[in-house]
Length: 237
Image (cartoon, rainbow, N blue to C red; front, side, top):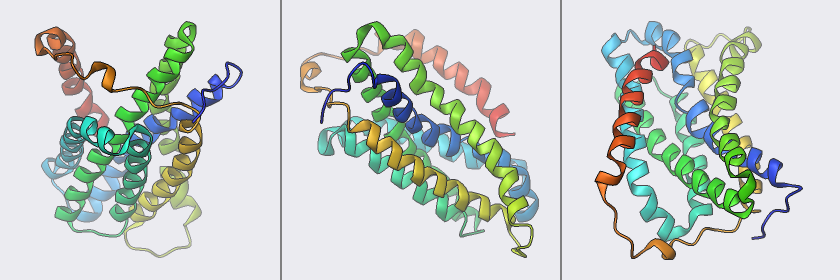
């Protein structure tokens, strides 16, 4: 793997931002647009409808905690792509069932997989920023801005797919949207992988001997936790 030249850092960062687009914009936030159709079709209560995104959030937490171990086992680049591919697969399978328990499990697993992509993508974005220190803020901004790109893609695809499939007599029209979103995820994964290959892997051993104190991150964790509590209900319903 090679270090990208300064001339290509912008395209590399943009390609890397597709990791955030896949893991949050497409995988998590698209559900809010699909929820009304799924709830009406499947007769869900608000509790079950909200539970789908709760399962996804718990999956994300599980994946984020497991991600450092996976990175050490298979390296950060493979973790990035494993997560993106699995996210696309679990989104695809959401379009192949109407069983609520199966969908709940798939939303959880999609959360786990999306965390692998988002966390490892953030590591690579930080690595890219370290190679071009004067652009660190811009690179990280581009990466996390990928979430917005995924939300825009979801907002376009969710109403567009039923319009294009108007002649299809499928009973559960929302399933076609999940399948379309998974295809977009796979295309984005190919572009993400091409960008990631330009970045050398960060060295994890350098911090292996340093201790971790929760107190050092307490205020940040608390603030981030309150942010999550505040936005997830709105972004679901």
